[in-house]
Image 1 (tube, chains in turn cyan, blue):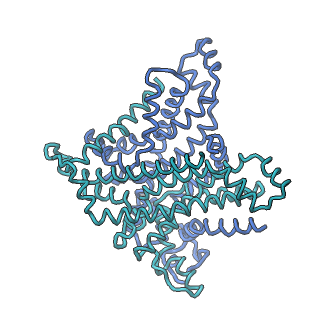
Image 2 (spheres, each protein chain N blue to C red):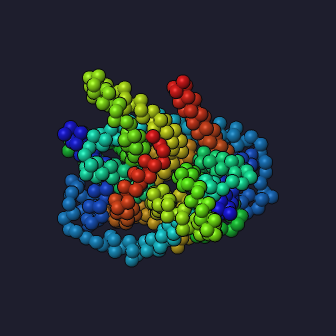
Image 3 (tube, rainbow over the protein chains, first blue to last red):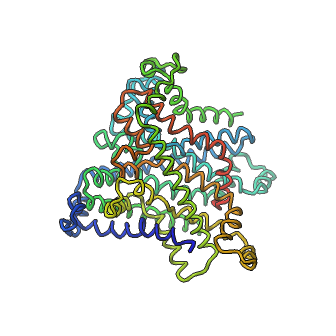
Length: 283
Length: 264
């Protein structure tokens, strides 16, 4: 009775879609097939074979791996750093700065894209103006395939610090004070306390943050979608954006569904690696 | 002292985009793109805000966004009921159903996006408000967190209410919900923020401008008025400020909520 509405909606919009996704990835489902199901043919593994030969999909995988390998460590280091600093603060300022660092993560991505697009603007943007006044040259923030990737990562790290910082803060405040008192008696310095008490006590929080951040960055989508549309020269195209474009701009639903299953496999593998890594560390 | 100065510098860097957004939205179009840029608006103007609501349909987008927010709260009620059901009732297959709920959290949005669209198309719900709202009503993660919280409510309380002759829904609304205020507060805030910011799904499902949400409208503005920076900044400010104000008032509940979710 109580779980009825929720379970029904979940079945309709989560379970059945996964099955459909699996089914249509073996078909040539497109816009014509959408109007008339008779026009849909089963093509077996053709979509998957085509994907492995599609240079744009290769670029998307490569870019996604770049996003993950730079973005994930950066987010973790920055949010841990901010959390550690905040943990030293007195109460009033503590609340103020906590809000300040959390706010980017609840603001709307389109609004952020609009504002950062303005800041990154090559001619009238604030960033290039600051660089100019420091005597440095202009940076083509969103106009160069590789720099554009970095620009999007900077934006996403800025947006991603907040929530992870809160998780770290919660974890930091649950470390028993007696650990530090014992260390003080043994004459440990600040760095030793950080290295031997704080960081190890945070291992579960770090694990949680790593897994969720990793999954999030593998699905990196909104930033390239609203900032660059995948350009320039496909330099910011991610796997998720590839799926969206194939599905909803070219209406090749079968092809896009196949790509989405490959992304799903990536996520599962990455998560499993994390879990095994964590287990072996615990043992 | 060192810590404070690092945080002040970091905090300033983090808030530059917001400061810049708000200040630019009050500048004239010409001033917004002059080089070197002015920091404080020389001629303070509201023209962009008036323009947004009078000529660019932001009123309609605002109404649509609020409708989505409203229904998201109904979804939250369903999530809460489900969380309660999983925490306090025993029925056949409960474990399996709950595992199924958890499993849906693992599926990336991109995987279900296409099939959900095809399903809605089959039900002729694309380009309708129902099509925008329905798929987002239930979130497995909310059900999970609420269930975790509800298991801490003592069973005796529910039992004694039953002995006193209270009906199940009355127990839920008059005993369980008031006891769950902390977790509900967090969920309500996060649900509000999520619904307020909803962008991709409305963009996919809605073809009709009358159904656009604020963020879709803002994206449209970015495409059509790509050179009017001050106007875009005003649009972004309309999008960001309500959430910002709400968040400043309720942020301590969110932090408490995180502390009670057990991620330690």
